[in-house]
Each structure stands twice: as structure tokens, then as C-alpha cells.
Length: 281
Image (cartoon, rainbow, N blue to C red; front, side):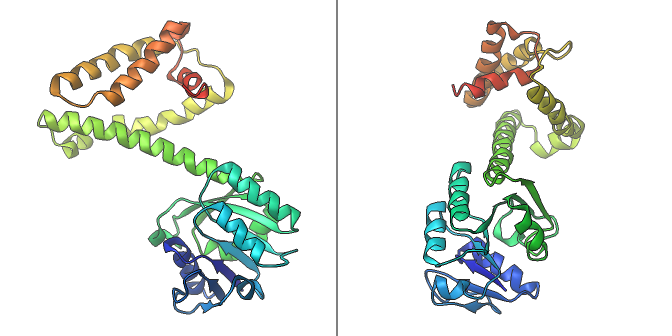
């Protein structure tokens, strides 16, 4: 039997996925009456976990998750999957508590909205005890077809998720700035995408090279170095200003590239800008 603690939008979807997969499921929520059809609703956390195998927690904040687990009584030898959002250190803190309480712990970062739970392409990053991931693989497969144990570090899934979102927001912001520029010139954005798709697709293809340079710390580049980026960025800023388009995003990039060149990195790859972000400026 699986136990789900917390029946918010995501918790409800998790419990429903277990039920839909034919897995006996007991649930608990601070506000009763929210159990999905087919699940058994417990009146307390202790009652919920009494006969459960895997205890799944999905609440608002890891401090709340830990408090619920502490209120559950003796959980020695039990397995917990914490799917609560937060920082990597917060996930590790719950993992440390679990270790001190004799609990096997797995942390997960869900990379889909609630309706995507259970979909074959739904991604969930897991970190922590491989024994929990292996022993409960059947239950975990009901949540998403692309669940992956990424590390023994319970904080790693959170960082994986943040890295995806960080890249996503930067990409979306850049695209929307470009869309403002295009539409101001009377160019439909869909027309741009249909004709520039090879160039846009190549951007994702560039990421592995960028990753290798960052990991190796080798940024020297014969072609396409930072000094060749600067004129294009400057043109983007000037075009934006001329059209009355917000320049903050483009000007930020201009400053990063200019500062790196002034620091003596004119012939380095764009990956050299990792130095700026590592300094926390």
C-alpha cells in the first residue's frame, strides 16, 4: 500500500495516479474530504502511515514535510519519497532527519504540471537511496514514464529542476524580447519561426559544447569568440532603442560580454561568462 500525505493539486494527482494504476492508496490531508475516488482517507497522519509501504509527501515547504513525518511516530525501516518543492539544502535537511530516524529517504523533483502526472513522458528527477528507488520502481513508474535516479545526493533533483527552469526562463525571456522586436516591425512571430527553425534548433545543439567547456574549464575558441558576439549584441540594443522596445535584457547581455572582453577574454567562448555568474554579481 502507498500513502500520500498532502492533497493539494499535485498531491491529489499523485494519489489518483496510484489508484488508477491499481495500487492500494491511503491518503491524508489537513482539510478532509479531498481524497480521489478509490483512495482510503485517513483521519490522522499516524493512521495513514500505519500500514503503508511507501510514504509519499507533497506539501508546501520542507519544514512542513518534516513536521508531518515527525508526527507520524516511529518510521524506522520505512521508505519516504518527499516530492515537496524547496531548495537543495532543505531537501538535504529532511534527508538528514530521515537518516537519524532510521528512515530510507528519496527526494523527487516533479517536472510537469499536475495533469501530466502519470504520462509516459512525465519527467521526475530522484535523488537519495537507490534502494528505495529500486524497491518501489513499480509505484514510481505510475507517476511518470521518465523518472530518473540522478544522484545519491537528495539535493541534486532540486538543482536539476532549477537548472531546467533557469534555462527555460532565460530562453523564454529572450524569445519574447525578440517577438516584441519582430512584431514592432510588422513581422509575424510564427512566420519567423517557420523560416528560422534551423537556426533556432541549432541553439539547443550548442548546449553540449557549452557544457563540456564549462566542465573542463577550457574556454579558448578559434571561431565565434566573445569579441565577435559584441557587435551583434550592440546592434540589438540600438535596434531595440530605436523601436522603443525594452532594452534591459539585451543591455544586460551587452554588459556581460563587454566586461569579459575588458578582462582579457576576447578570444574565449561564450562559456567564459560562467565566471560572472559564479561571482554572484
